[in-house]
Length: 93
Image (tube, rainbow, N blue to C red):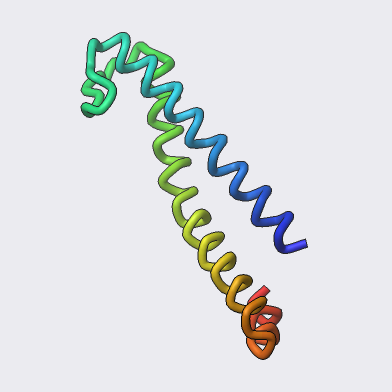
């Protein structure tokens, strides 16, 4: 079950990152900005501006989840290598 939960959460993180990429691509194309440069458009009349800002916030929030998933994965790998540490892992989960 923990593996399924981690997979589901990681899937949500990737989905949010994809939404941000899409919004950034649209905004970069519209503003004539290079893909790796910061987008300087702040048009309050554009729905994509707000979509991009929402996506940026969600991705920032997701980074915490992503870090926790990686930490849990490392703990699970350590538990498989050292059976005595499984008790600690079960306590955390």
